[in-house]
Length: 84
Image (cartoon, rainbow, N blue to C red; front, side, top):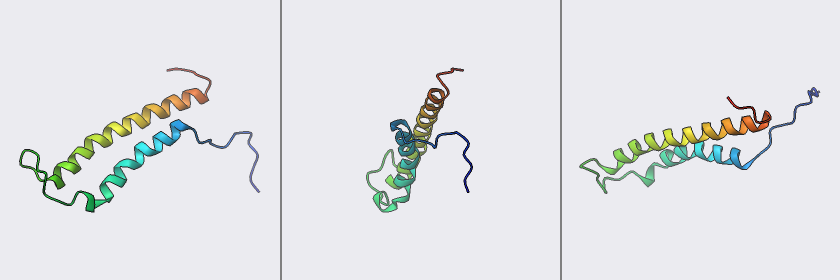
């Protein structure tokens, strides 16, 4: 039998949906290998297969940072707006 603690269950908010999309996008982009398993277009002599994956390293870092900042803002809003 579950205990009643008085806490509300997590709610789905637009910010949390965006956080989820930011975190899942790199997985989808890189696990769909047939979309980038080709040589052309080459970028400064580097085949597409390689530079596409390296571009996603940078894109993933930016998306993770965005998700982290959104999560911080969401948590501050849930705690009554206390800022650090």
